[in-house]
Image (spheres, one colour):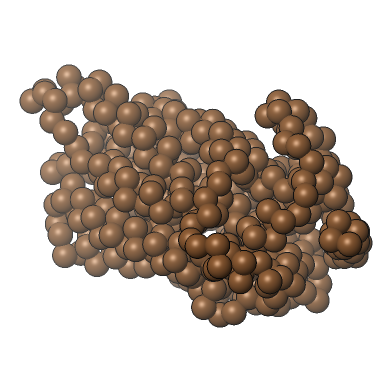
Length: 483
């Protein structure tokens, strides 16, 4: 980018300008790819391993755990590196998304191939395990490369308390909309293609193309706004950067940050555990077909999408805490209902799915709306903006928790006597012990997670008034530096 353009952008004040619709849409599109791929992986990867690749449930859970742990480990590193990235053409975050988009899509697709290392199925399991571990590690690495810089852009696009909630509403409209799109594609493809293995490959191929296009839409759509922010940030004199270890100490001494990562961890443990077990619940506990799974998931995701803007408006009037409490309460009731459902109670199952979707939307919206407020508190205390490291450690702890949760679900299924299958063979009848384990995973376990999240939300310290005071002090500091 030439100097004249940079000088022109620097005359704008990205801290106070309102975001236009075009920028909000482009920002939202950046979560389309990660949402589609994560949604398909969460809902189908475990059942793909057990029912298509023929991997025992315990080993399948271990594959997912290893991938999630690595995904968490590389988050702070990528966050730290994006904070240090310098590019006049792209800013700090966008180069990672631009160059990482295509490898991210290709590696996602490779997760859905079932290589035949041996004609003997039992001898094929070991090599398959290591293949999926290797692809999982690489895939999660590039997921971080494109997604973490994306999430760290929120405070760089706007510093308005309520507009951040609006911006995240657009983000999660694309996120949940992408999730719904992926489920509709799954429904169509599963009906059209009878072979389970070929159906998963076709679904992965379509989702890969959509994901890459969404990322590039975001990169080029928000670029002007990001560069305007960068011009202002570079002009502002900042203290010398602290060593990485010292930054960690400051990050974890930020009390509101600890509450936010706790809230996010509890919310997403509930989301991810429920999502990974729902396909087993629909098929094995409710007696429905595999092709019925997407319709149940669409009921959850469509409701969550419709409620996003409702919750966004209510949060302006009632506050983020109250909205979170309302949504989680409905979800807890739904989780209890799912535990007691019997085969044949299909209408009740969809009612519970809709109630859960109302709660899921607050799990998407509220924790991410809190994070920029935490970052501004850190800026007030330290004089530095370190979005990357905060988002990195938020996601690291969340993924460690998810890794442990997926490991427990997979091994609980195996211990309970769950019977895996392979592509081309009918699904086996599961023992009562396995059915009970599935019910525990769909009801009581998410309920405990959500209750813990409610407790943490109650004690979260940053209110609208406190945030306004933080922003006033930051503005005074900036005016003193500019004078």
